[in-house]
Image (cartoon, rainbow over all chains, first blue to last red; front, side):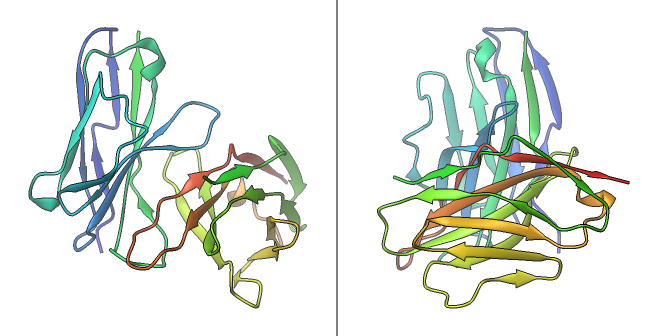
Length: 114
Length: 117
């Protein structure tokens, strides 16, 4: 079974530029999450999708971050314009709807903002 | 709201010995789940073990066991017979359990475990 796919693995941009990250969850997983992990900290939830609808985006900085999950499968997370404090690893995860099991994570996309 | 506290930023253990990683939590949810994840230097989060708040027995998965003490709100991870490959960052996490909803994990700050040869 293929895992959660993310790209790009690494991205370096200058502040005020834009960047987009892509995630393909495990087939059949209705729930998709984006987490932000700043160096030395635990992951923090940015947004949670159920199929193509948003369940929780309360911690998403909506003035600069946006995310979509068209057709309830792939998802894109965008940052525009980027700030220095956005330097982090962006982790995508997926799970079965209503599951009592774990979240499955991708390898993450490491963003460096200069 | 949930809160996870991991008070050990770093731990060292000798190969083949057991080690306990501490985790305390706070929540007002009547039902919840507790998780441990391992994050090697490659960055991927690897699920290790799960404990439900109403589970009567402590969870075990191979060399991993979860020492769940509900009254103390602690969910410590015990790794027996440590191996060099266990060197990684370990995160404790929790999620409320409600009917029909998917998980939403809150993570602690992690413990960096180093296994010495």
